[in-house]
Length: 95
Image (cartoon, rainbow, N blue to C red; front, side):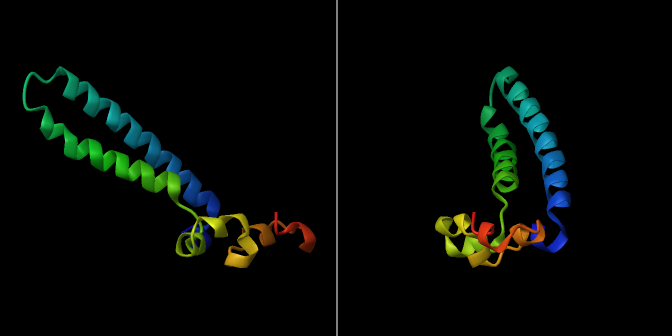
């Protein structure tokens, strides 16, 4: 996703989204704790908020997701161009 629309934008929007979802989780937990009965109705929104949080914290280069976790350590081999845009010397791009 960040390769398509830019890493700074993705980071910004994910940070804003994670902040809003965390506030929403606080509200859900507050109301669930105060509920006298039928607390199970708060589980679906609670779970949905955590799924959004996991999505936002786990977003990486698409190539890494397809090739597995080991590919994360070598972005040049996976096709992720982030290190190349930083204008690092060719011998330092593998770090």
